[in-house]
Length: 211
Image 1 (cartoon, rainbow, N blue to C red):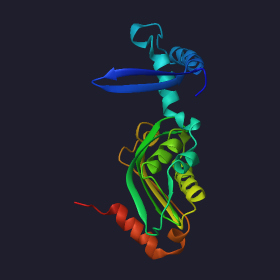
Image 2 (image 1 turned 45 degrees about the vertical axis):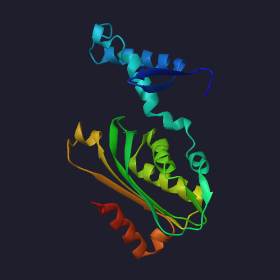
Image 3 (image 1 turned 90 degrees about the vertical axis):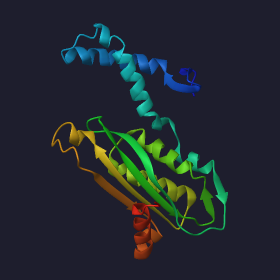
Image 4 (image 1 turned 30 degrees about the vertical axis):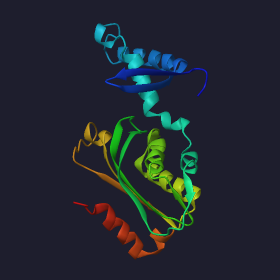
């Protein structure tokens, strides 16, 4: 964290909310958003909008904080040698990201599996890797590949599988305005590419219910 970054904590019912932001960036972005409000025909000086530029600037910095994270280091921080070579699946990982074309949200779930080759990783690190890439301006196709490549290149497993299902507000709120459409992307390496049975097992596991 640089000298310009500020950590502020606010206790709410015993929960401390930590906001991390850069004051110089907030001020610069807020200035532009004040101008944008005027260009849209609003009065940025009216009571309800006085703090909106700053709020938007802080929100954007949080929504894109993945640029400050190093996903491979997240994985390396919890890698362990282990003689386990069966599929490890983490499914239903919540995904929130921003479309780089219209800067509108897309959100959904990611399902990820890997087959260890001498190393496993702490299970919480896989969702953290998803967040590190998702909290950037993205397209779903690249996001899927980045998660796959990070796990493959860092853990060197026998294979990685990633399936992502998301709804895009750029399709729901504007353009074609199809509110119920879901976009599915997938990316595989190693055994998941070469072995149909392994890939089929992964797809069965992510659609199965434990109930």
